[in-house]
Amino acid sequence: MTQLALVIDLNVCVGCHACVTNCKEWNTSGMAGPLSDFNPYGADPTGTFLNRVQTFEVGTFPNTETVHFPKSCLHCEEPPCVPVCPTGASYKRKEDGIVLVDYDKCIGCKYCSWACPYGVREIDEKQKVMKKCTLCVDRIYDMGLPEKERKPACVLACPTSARLYGDVHDPESEVSVAIRENSGYQLMPEWGTKPSNHYLPRRKTQLRIHDDELMRADNPLKKERLLPKPDKNEPSLDDVTSW
Amino acid sequence: MHPAFSVIFLTTLIGVGQGLFLALYTGQVYALFNVLSERGDHHFYAMGSLIALVFLVAGLAASFFHLGRPERAWRSATQWRTSWLSREVIVLPAFMACVFIYGMAHYFTWDMPLFTLGETLQVDFIMLVGAVGTLLCFALFVSTGMIYACLRFLQEWHTPLTVSNFILLGGASGFALATAYAALAAPGLTGFYGKWALIITVLAFASRLASLVRNHKLKPKSTLQSAIGVRHAKIAQQSQGFMGGSFNTREFFHGKSASMLRSVKWLFIALTFALPFVFLAWGLSINSTGLLLMAFAVQYVGLIAERWFFFAQANHPQNLYYQTIS
Figure 1 (cartoon, each protein chain N blue to C red):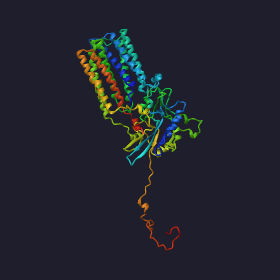
Figure 2: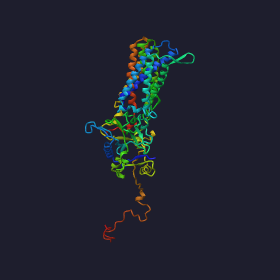
Figure 3: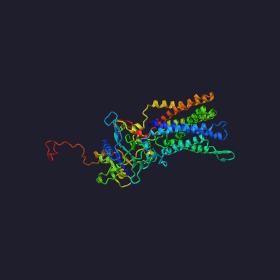
Figure 4: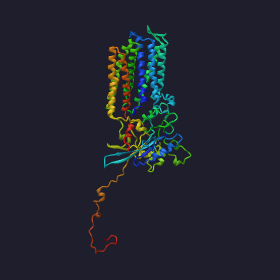
């Protein structure tokens, strides 16, 4: 069984919002209708986005770390938003595990958004239906596109390759390997929603140097010690080593 | 959560309608078993059913204001296998139809005995419709309550107390209305309905108090740590990703101060339980229709406050992601 998903590497994300912008651009231009904005240049702008990048500060100054945190639908394997839908507009595709909303069936009751602990569903205030990440279902199967472009818009936009895309059920896929080898984790595991999207934690590469690696106690030549300063008149080995 | 008045009116209005129907039918069953000396005439029950129906229709009408696409509302009956909302959408019209038929049966006095239970108990069409209506009435209470109680991350709602609150609060307001109605139309039944209204109001208070105490002690299961998956005692949001508002900042926050929340809590405790109890007891003792009407009116206003608080108190875990604009 296939379960398409994203893996987001928090170690690499720089919080540039390119994924947000490209997501909005692609999904507002599709045949499903625009992702409506209101007052985009006014005092109180608001609009529908399928992807957001948030920023968190971990720790207390001066020992702080900034974590940029992209957030979109996690395409849960046990999506709590799907069974509550009264019309069947919200559904999880059997063939690839993408959670979708049928905009022609949605009645805009918002119940699914209540049932999602992650807050990744946003109502379109103009179309009056619930919208969410489609994993660019209208891109990834488009045979008109070159194969390397058959990926979600956010993945293509990321300048640091912080977003990986693939089948998390295939153990050899890029995403599965990344999750396995870099301790990929799920958000809010306490609710048993089994999100398909995973996050890779911040990782630090540390070089451990011991004192005896700098000053070798067992060096018979005592190479690191200050050498006795020879007289200026003594012959030198060459011009370089003379002083 | 942001309390939406469409849903507040839906749940409180159908609660009154359901409670009133239960009161009417209970009175009839009591009369059937000759527990009650006084029995209302058919006209009393027909009019009562009409009043219940008015409340149910008003509630149904209010619910449409909650929908973005009300013209597609018919679709919401399809997922009854999994969705409590869908079940409510089916049970509500079925119950309304039952109340309508029950009222009509009384109006046209379709009381030919159909069969006899035991030795003397004669069951007619009205009793049968009423029994089906009672079943549907409880099914509707359970569906409405479960819509909220089934959402496990809204911990304030995820308890059987949510369902019992809906049943008892709806019952209390319905019996209070029945008391006032009886005082106007069938004074002999006022005492019967009034006593039940008092009992159910006390039970509802116990149940609501239990849920208040439970929710006071709740510890949120989700934390900022589990929300973003970083293990550190001190995490603070610096940006939620946008400067303006969004659906997420409007739908899941009540936007009122903690002191306002506290005030509404005491307000609804006073208006839903304390004052109606006093008015009911007082009105029954001095036989005052005005006081009994007042008891129902005050309790209904209290229920609006109660339902507002019910929504406002629920803290959605998604709010962890929306704490700082920038």
